[in-house]
Image 1 (cartoon, rainbow, N blue to C red):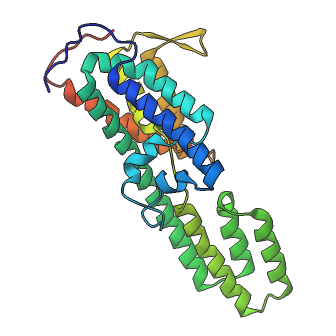
Image 2 (image 1 turned 90 degrees about the horizontal axis):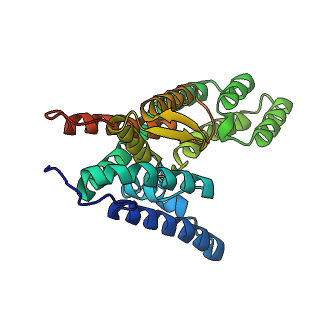
Image 3 (image 1 turned 30 degrees about the horizontal axis):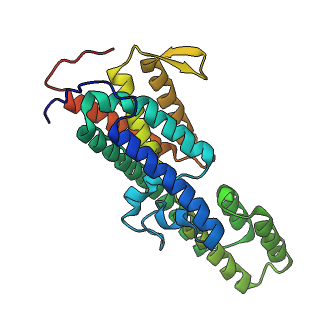
Length: 274
């Protein structure tokens, strides 16, 4: 790609501006349609795992324009404007748009890869249980995946089973309940531009490493340190299995792709870092 030479710095360049508009419109459209017609656009446009009956290929793109709460969209859009505007002014609209979507796709692919890993281990555990179902094994299995289940309903089922432990029909029912965990897990959608935004954040840290960012508006931290600390936190949260409804590996995937793209684009030339 040829170098982009802006004639002036734009506070709200064209790609960032249009991404902000589309995301905000989609957020309020989702709220209105849900309230007025009872249609959940998150289930339609959020990204599901491949085995889910809700999965559609277009979700690889559409999930980037969906957000789960006002705080979610505000934080993503604020970061997109704050860091993305500087990148678009340096790279130009075409390169920035490519970068944004490639990072978003990278985040989605990493999330799906990690989901597949967890899903495979989950299926193996359930297959093993199905061979010899019993009360103790069922309690252990459901406790492992309690974040996906209604703990009260599970405990009621176990109490009922304890009253008739020799009943083979309830044992078969427990197997069906165990396999339902797979469907519940696969049907969980992820939404948000966070994968793309994390790529933008990493690129900003690489191109402007010594620029001061004011954390919570009053603590000055150089961009390179802020990016490193944030990435370390996401790695910790991802590998610790934090059940906080945040797709940490999508963030990590976007960050990794962002890092690799910047390194690739700058491989044959020296650039100034600010």
